[in-house]
Each structure stands twice: as C-alpha cells, then as structure tokens.
Amino acid sequence: MTKPAKTKKIGKVFLVGAGPGDPGMLTIRGREALSFADVVVHDRLVGSRIIESLPAEKKITDVGKRPGRPGLGQDEINRILIAEASLGFKVVRLKGGDPFVFGRGGEEAIALAESGIPFEIVPGVTSAIAGPASAGIPVTHRGCATSFTVVTASEDSSNQGSSVNWENIASGNQTIVVLMGSKQIGAITKRLIKGGRSPDTPAAVIQSATLPTQREVIGTLADIEKRVCLAGISSPSTFIIGEVVNVSHIISTKSSLPLHGKRILVTRSRAQAGSLTKMLTELGAVSVEIPTIVSEPPDDFNELDSTISQLERFQWLVLASVTAVEFFFDRLEHLSLDTRHLFNIKVASIGPATRQALKDRGIEPDFVPDRAVSSSLVEGFKTEGIRDCAVLLPSPEKSPDTIRKGLIELGCDVTRVTAYKTTMPVGSESLVSSAFKEGIDMVTFTSSSTVTNLISIVGGVIDSKVSVACIGPVTADTARQFGLFPDIVADEHTIQGLISAIVSYYEGK
Image (cartoon, rainbow, N blue to C red; front, side, top):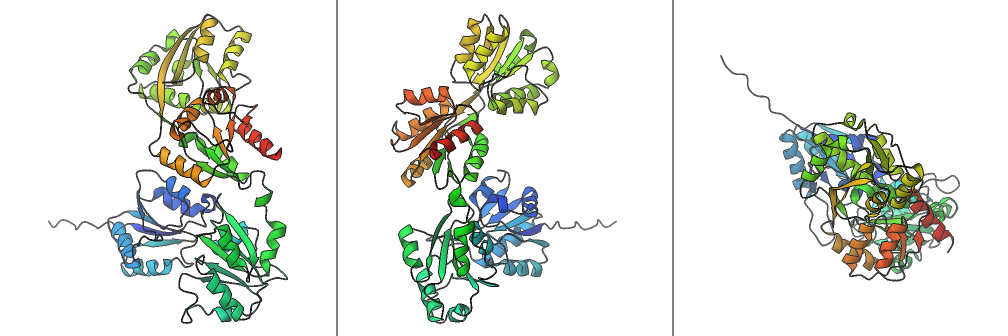
C-alpha cells in the first residue's frame, strides 16, 4: 500500500503596524499576533519597549536601516519572510506606524501572495496622524484645513526630478505632513515657498513623537530650519506645515504636566521598574530605566529548601518584599508543597506591593505595619505583644539586619535564610555612563542595593546638580553613607509615595 505523502506545513506572515513608538498605541490585534509569533522581523522605528517586552524564546531579527549602516534590501527581507513561513513558523513583520504608509507593506504582501504564503494585514496607527496629535496639532481643523497631504522626504527634495511635486502641493491651504524629512527641511521649505506658500505659514517639527523623549519645535516656513538646527532636533521626526500648527498653543497638554521634560533615572530591577517608569512617564518625565540590581537565585537552595521542609517549627513567616514572596513560593512549589502547608503559620509582610503579591497567592497577611519600613514591622510586633515566637525570615543574601535584630530583642527565635541574591546587571555600567553624559535631572533609589550599586558604577561621585530621591529613610541613610544628600525622602514608603514626593518637590521649585 502506498503511504500518503506528507503535507508540507506552511506558516503565516502577519504584516503588523507597530504604531508611532509608544507601546500603548500597538493595536490589540497586533499584540495578539506578537503573542503567538515564532519569529519577529522588525524595522528600526519600532518602539524599543515593544521589542524589549518580547519573550526571549522568540526569534527576533532586526532588518532596520540605520544612518551609516547598510540595511537589508527589500528583496532580502522578502526572502526572510518567505523562508521562515515556509518552515511552518508564524512570522510577524513588525513595522513602525502603518505597514501601508511608506512602509513597503504592499511590496511584501505581493511577494508573499506570489509565493503562496498565507498572510494577514494588521493596520497600525500612522505617525503621520499620531505625530502631530501628540503635540496637540490636528491635521484637519474647521476654519484651518479640510484636508491633508502626507509625503515622504526620503529622497533629495532639492532635486527638480524628485517624484514629489512640492510646488503643486504648496497650493491651497491643506495641511502638509512630511515623514522622514529631518535632513531635508531647508530644501522642502524653499520649494514650498517657491510654490506659493507664504513664508509666514506656521510649521512644526516633532522628534520621537509619542515617546517620553518627544521634543517639539514650532516656527514658520521662513525660520523652522534654523529653529530645528538650534534645538538639535534629529530623526525620527515629523514635519507639519499649515495653519493647524497654531492650534497646538491651545490644546497641547504635555507642557502642563508636572514633570514635563525632567530626565529621571530609575535604578530598580527591570522586573519591578515598570510601575515607577509608567507613572513618571504619564506625568511628563523622560524616564531613563537602567536597572542597577537584578534578583537571582542563591548559589544553592539547600538551606531554604531544608527550612521549608520544617515549616511546622515556625509560628510566623515574615516576607519583606515582593521578591522574597516570589522566591519563597517558587521553592514551595518546587518541593511539591502549597499554601495548605502554611495553615498553622501566621504571615507578616511589609508594604502594599508585598501584601498584594501574597493576596495573589490566596494569602491575606495577618500583620502589615502602617509604614513600609523594617523598623515599623518590629515596632508593630512589640505593640501587638508578639514575642517569644519562632520566626522564618527569607531574605536576600545581603540586606540590612533590622528585622532579625529587632525581633531577637523581643525574645523571638529568628531563622534568617537566604532566598535570593542581588547582583549588578551586565551592561549597566556603560548605560549609566551614557545617561549621565546626556544629562540626568534626578536619580531615584528604591532600596539600599540600588544606592550601593549605582555609586559603584559612577565611582562614588554624582554631580551635585542631580537631585536624589529615596523611597524611605533606610535607603536615604545608605545614600548619606556614600556622601549623597537626598533632596527627597518619601513620607509614604511606596512607589506612589515616591511619585507624590517627586511631584511636590518640582512644584515647590
């Protein structure tokens, strides 16, 4: 009997628009496609935070063209898409903005269709609209413009043989949006003025639209080139010409944000930096996220595992951080145990984030101090009359000894066991150096370890012009030990408390 021929598995390509840069502007369908993709092939202008959020197991290929570095030709990109899909993979071709707005998405779709590769087009938010909008500029506005034209300036705009008829575009009062034109502003303005646009026509250039690093320059056709040069604006940028630019003076909201333009260094671990970074960005800050610590397993888990196997010895389990919760319960699960084995143990935690991490695991802590500091837990035990009990304290390898010593003074038998260790992330040194060269207004510290490691990186010196913000008094004391003088010590020792203190600091200046 003849065996049936094996059917060759064919994958699928998703042509996805990533939006203008802000990961929040990636569409729901685009995010879904990324979640089940095996391979991601992306351009340079795709927001870095989108790429950084992708799981490590995905194959990620950068085919972007960069100044001074030759990029892959379109034929080679088409070949990669076809080859990966032919192997049965789900492939996301991720493009900045929308794939069909100067993204060559049409060319890639044709190549896939001719090769018999299934594909899906996932539109994105084009920077031609999102860029102006992010600066409070509507591309159409009653009384100003009822239409708009989008052109690319990727070719030499001073060339009379250019495929863009600038003189024709100059006629009328429609809004003109120019993409990829940062190096062509002078040539473009000359040709538009030659075509009949008034030199007094409002004009704006927006760099890195929708990102925390967004910068804007507003002027007229006559002076916009000079203004852009003085401001040091570079690509990626969007150039807008028309009366609609004047509307930005009324509806732009970014400059009214309390932390607008402040460059703030976030030093906590990448796994925990998200909430702080997001809050700072929403308040207008340029959040420079460079983790100076990373939490890792200890050299071995023998001591922790042995202690967990004897949980019946303890009356209290004290978990002082989200990381301690994560490592403790990971080992509990590793040992084929679960929360039922804590039925006879009371649990104490420090801070709302740690409390929430426990609640996510079905545990409501029996005690949470009013203030999110170690000394408050000790004082709370004393006030509540909790003494002379056996306490398990899973902790980082190196940490302040406040809790252990304080509970021992209350007559407790404290077993402090290493649950994890904190180390310096690889590559942080060069990133920190670059960040300070570019300019930092404030450094935030959320633990003593972040202070110690950053000081180690910078050689013990931070410019006195850089403000220092600490989440609480213990972190602040560590900063003082290294000769730093904290400008901010949050009254509420939480991320929200730190944010509130930073806002108050700048509002008081």
